Image (cartoon, rainbow, N blue to C red; front, side):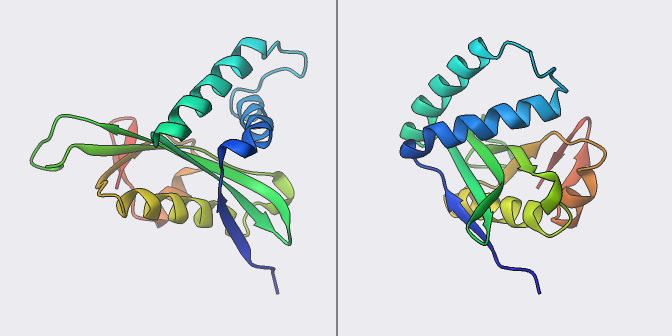
Length: 154
């Protein structure tokens, strides 16, 4: 039987761990070479996290199995003009959903997405966007996301 997946919210005190995971995600998603200079990316991501987490504009989290961090995720909160399909204008952008290779296909992605979606829906967000790879599409579809022109929403 697999151990429980525990999702914890990242705090400002977790900045170094956030940055470690963010850089791993960027290397993986963008297929960056090991010697790619990430100095500017690290500086800007650190600035972003400091500003947005402290102001409530970003929620980041970690997934753990047996006390070992195996994945991460994040969601950005913003406001768009109110419309018939989103009267309060509150939106979110789901991103940075990532699980290390040995732990994939064990429900970590589902747990991360469900946790993040609940966090923002509890605060009144009804429109959630994301970009996905072909390999990630089944995960999001299984959670109710629908295709849009190059995007998905829930």
